[in-house]
Amino acid sequence: MGLLLIEIPLALLAFRRGWRVAPVLLLALPLLVLAFQSGFAAWLLPILDGYFDPAGTARAISHAIALLGLGLVSFLDPSEELARLRASTAPKRRRTGSLYQI
Image (cartoon, rainbow, N blue to C red; front, side):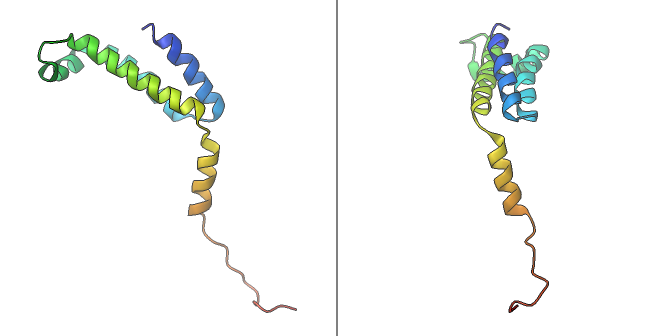
């Protein structure tokens, strides 16, 4: 839960940069793992084979994904990407008049 103190300001920075859905999803990931900790731990138990605490490992992995994702989206500007995507998918306007106008 201490890493949420780092993740929340990164999410706020991502909101200010223009992101809307990504910060919410990345903040929800550690909270989701915390809520369903036993399910994620049971899923990781065969993979870890008793070397690590499965519940702690699930929390650590979720925080690592959230930190990396929030760090990435807080320094990327979505407006340039969205404008480029909109320009490439926008229908082309056709000329209605004659091509040879004087």
